[in-house]
Amino acid sequence: MAQTFDLSDFSGDELTSLINEATSLRQTQRQSRERELPTAADGSKGQDVHDPDHGVITAPTPRAVEEEGPAHGGPEKAVGATG
Image 1 (cartoon, rainbow, N blue to C red):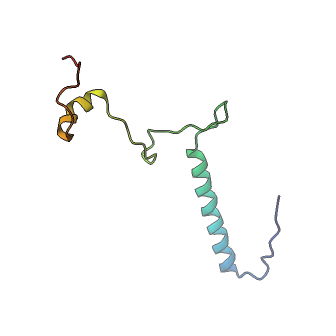
Image 2 (cartoon, rainbow, N blue to C red):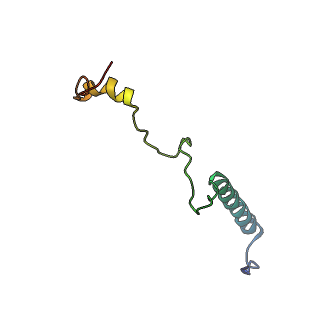
Image 3 (tube, one colour):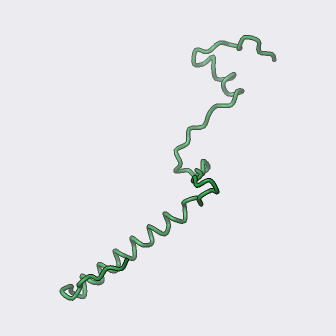
């Protein structure tokens, strides 16, 4: 739905400032949309966990737990572990 704005009282500088601000806002919105992942067939949106701004907290691998566990008060070896 288009809206009409009365800009007749704006000076040339005010119009230029308004246009520049609107152009900047439009560019920001376009960049934001470009980063969004497309909607999947089930309607969900995926998450790019490789995006540096995602904020994902990765789970440790079993080997990392085995190697780092004792440093954090964990047992030296899990019961029934081999190796």
